[in-house]
Each structure stands twice: as C-alpha cells, then as structure tokens.
Image 1 (cartoon, rainbow, N blue to C red):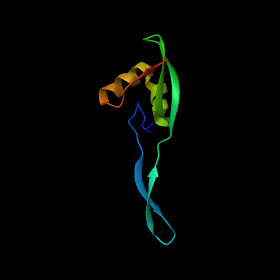
Image 2: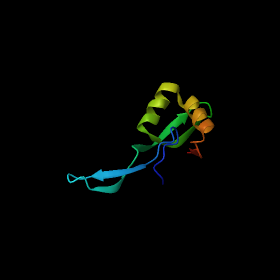
Image 3: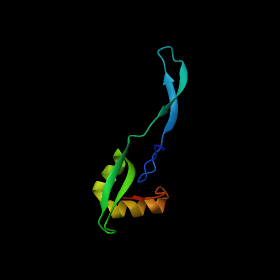
Image 4: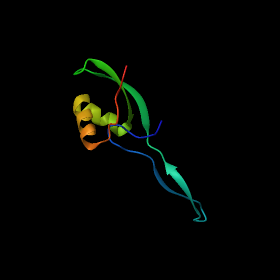
Length: 83
C-alpha cells in the first residue's frame, strides 16, 4: 500500500542526508499516514481511508463529507473502501 494521503494528496518526497563532512546521500521523507475508519453519516456506512495527520485535521475542521468532496474534486481520492 502506498503512503499517499487520500484527503490532501501528500506523498513521500526525496532529499539528501547530509553528513558532518557535507557528503550527500539520497533519502526519503515519508508522510505521517494512518489507516482510519470513519462513519459517513450522509451514506450511512463506515469507510476506511488512508489519511495524514493534516488530513485528519482537515476532516475535523471541515467535516467528512466536505473533505471527501474536495479531495474528489482535486483528484486525490481514488477509491473509498466501505466496510
């Protein structure tokens, strides 16, 4: 399973490890993602999403239905797994 947030679209980026001698080697900056279950009141079902920490804050701020609509509009939401 890829580490991509379904709400914000955040994914891992690459950068450099820089040693004390300033030698650079490639590394990955992963996203803080969680697999969470949410109750979608408008549909009356439970859904499972892979969301980042900022995605959880967006859901708390805007509400689940508004966050899902915005994510689908921006193309981040590929599929919703229902339980």
